[in-house]
Length: 327
Image (tube, rainbow, N blue to C red):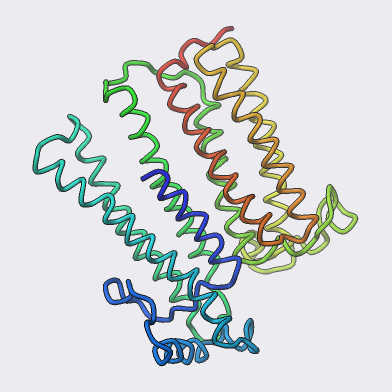
């Protein structure tokens, strides 16, 4: 399930970055499992796509073969969503009937199933926003909600996976300190900030580093009203905030690593996380300077998944062994 959700996040990123998310204009959870099977069916789907604003804005010269390409990404994304639901629900039903759910974890398992169902509804809610008059892409707010829910589901699955490796034994440890959970929260906020960068194409502007068009704070940072719209709709502010969160994450990680440097149980995840953070920040700069090409942007999103997984691993270790802080 963890691998399936990772694949879902990466394919979702490709769907967004190739402007494919609005190629299927209807919500058909059952009947939509099959792609068009005839030339007439393909033409009918293409005609539906031509009726939405995105076609004229993004793909006015597209032919049927081009439509097939973007249709594939959205269909694959939705199909994988169906597979994830079945891959979790069917074994869960069997294990429940046979009474083999680990003690005390039943509510957690069914909560994950509920979240997977909610995520499907959020996905259509997101797509529906891009089908409205005047919209040429999905709402960045709904895109961020969709991605945020994906990482919440991934977090639940990772925790269950870590517990299964310990044969579902109850944990008695209690992590001390506040740095690890704050670091996890900041990683999650940075992922959401990345969704706003993708949702507004902010990575294709201010393609210089370390300054933004010769300034530390870009001149267009604060021009929208009310002020809070700058954080979510102003490309200059969105990119600047994403940069600053990266620097904050690096600084917080240095403090965390120094605090727990002598805790042998946390040393391995700290080293792995250090390598991944340096890679992710360097990759982010490279992606920015290259004006966010598809391959680098996708790799950057996949690497954020690895950073999140490593952070969850650190948190799990910290919860069990984090009370051994040297002072």
